[in-house]
Amino acid sequence: MIKKGIRRQIVLHYFFVVFLALLLVEVIFMILIRSYYYDSIYKKIENRISSVSEFASKFKQPEQSLQSYLLDFSLPNTELQLLDEQGNVIDNSTNFAADLSVQTSDVTQALTGDTGKWIGKQPGTGQQVMAVSKKLDNIVGDQVYIIRYTTSLELVNDKLFTITVFSVGIMAAVLIIVFVVSTGLANSIVRPINNIRDVSAQMAQGRFDARIKGDYRYELGELASTLNYMAQEIVRTNQIKDDFISSISHELRTPLTSIKGWSETLNSGGYDPEETKIGMQIISKETDRLIGLVEEILDFSKLEQNAMKLVMGTVDLRELLQEIMLNVWAKAEMKQIKLHLDSEETAYLVHGDGNRLKQVFLNIVDNAIKFSHESSIIFLSLQRVADNIEISVQDTGIGISEENLARVRDRFFQVDHQNGGTGLGLAISQQFVELHHGQMLIRSELGAGTTITVSLPALQAEQLTEPSQLTQG
Ligand code: ADP
Image (cartoon, rainbow, N blue to C red; front, top):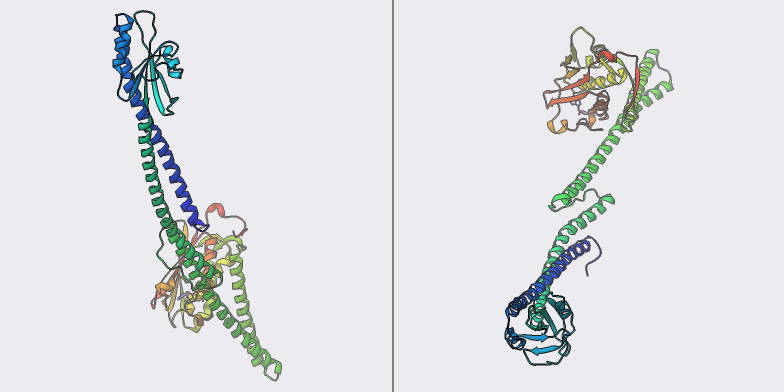
């Protein structure tokens, strides 16, 4: 007995469908073959009856002689009877039970003028027989004759029985083959499913190193590779999360150590005003850094929850870039990096949230400075391309390898965790750009430099309206 489950379902379904189909074919086949045999017997008798009828209709001699001629029309293995109107046997080709009266339906039918046919058990012998009767027309004199042929169906029935047994045997053989084939098919489906189930159970228990092995085809293959991919992604995300926690802790610890150090120093007193001023400046700068860090994390979580609100208005990107250049000037100066803006002396207007767009370009320019070599130049450019405004930030810094390039936009991804970031900057920038219906393209070559191009839809005349608010999602 097959255990309950998909395997049994498949085998039973196949078995049932094929069994029904075979049964139907078997029944139709048997009906056809039976009627074929019976019909051919009937046809043979009917032909003979036609000859007798024709002979009788042309017979012009006294009736006594017709009766003696009729029995010459007998058929092999068939009893020929001559009946009167009441069904009494007048004469018989076998001369057996000549005084019997016949009342079967074929005789009644023959009396109406048709050829009567009856299949049934013959009284006395109990054998199944076919009787065909016909009234003879145009007979000289008053005597009505019914000619009746009776033939045993036992031989035909024996033959039909042999055919039935043979075809049932074939049916059983086909069912056995179906059983074997469907069990094989069911196994080929169930085995991978069981394997996938076992491995996913391991995954559910946290064993994400487990993988579904085996080269499965079609949907099962897709399911297996999807699960493997899911496990791989979970491992990767966990890794990223761990990296994030360690980098965020590091990020928090550095300013906190500095703040704590200076506050303790200042608390102990006895320092001159100049030193106190430097200490207070460092505390303030480090606090700003902490605030920036926390804000970045908050922005990210808002974006992730689709809860970011944009305050839309008209933004001049040229003005925005110039402002950013001023913001990062001190940082760039520390590495003797020059920033060069290439644009026409005109306003480059877009419809957007000025603060968020500033955040995007500040992050890109800040990265460019962070990853550029000392005494290099960062080129910023602004140009109109069709209905868009393209802003490019190009550096000649360390660049990004092809493999990492595909992942720099991933949240928490950093090529080097020592660079002092969260790995959220580009992920947030990407989402802000998308919220402004723009695109961000990053091209980079390891050792040669990076170019980040942001394309934003230029402001159309009809958008020159009052500031509006746009909620993400
Ligand atoms: P963060 O700068 O806080 O680490 P980002 O999301 O802004 O995070 O950047 C992700 C990573 O992409 C960086 O850690 C760095 O490895 C790489 N990257 C970004 N901009 C540049 C650039 N201009 N040159 C080289 N690498 C860069």
